[in-house]
Image (cartoon, rainbow, N blue to C red; front, side):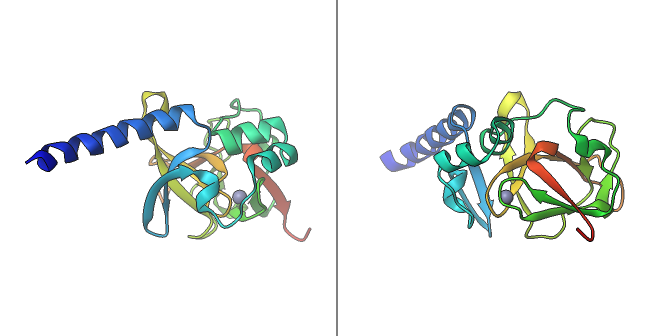
Length: 176
Ligand SMILES: [Zn+2]
């Protein structure tokens, strides 16, 4: 009987602690990878790993803030908003190809937007409940770097809008 009563409380306390962690600890996210769900520092779950010290050393402070602290760049500040050439958008953290120019569209938001990732392996998502909203956070599936969010108001054929921080991406023109 005791256990019956304790179990829901236990789950509730783990849940609320996780939400608190999500707000207070940079990089602490609910990770869904290959069908498994767990809470952890993003570094722990990904194939491409660096220590926090290495990330801080190798990224600019703006890149670090977005990729490793789930920050958001100011709308309209990324040169990639105006990138119209054919090519591939790679993760600024680890270089993994993430999006093709074929799926880029002008969303009018001031952030580079795509209607689908390059392939199923490119990005993963988590549930982000920060700022009193429930949004779907998008990160690089290889290094866990935070990229932006995905919303269900994109153009056909997917109907999705991957709203990305340009600073989390590096553009590689075709043939370069
Ligand atoms: Zn990456």
